[in-house]
Image (cartoon, rainbow, N blue to C red; front, side):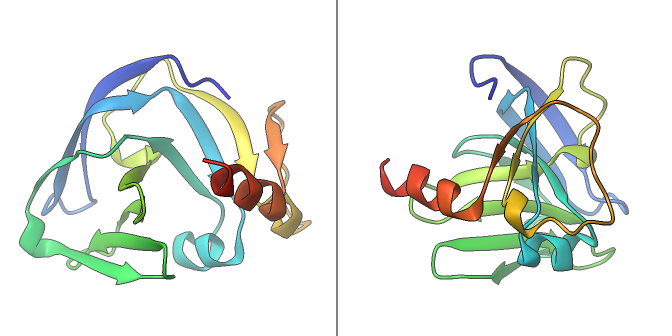
Length: 142
């Protein structure tokens, strides 16, 4: 995974009611294939890591859903755009890559919960792939 390159970015939901600015966007794009992300996104969730702090305008249009004891998902109440996934223990925001204005240096380089990926799609990119068990082991060691 490419974790050293970062940039700054601003984006919004489809209707523009919620805007998000991130000072630290890692340029490494990841795909999550877990059952919850696929139900939420309608397919794999493509995200960039944006750290602990986001500037959110239109917070009153933001809905948060506690999808587990350790994570929440946020989306626009008006248009339904899924905006970010937040890990509660460390306040890490994984923001949907597609909400940002175009970022030229993004690289799709990792996939998680690869063991839950259905067989009807496959990405052509060479990526670092991790199973759900490997993801949980990684975070339990942190």
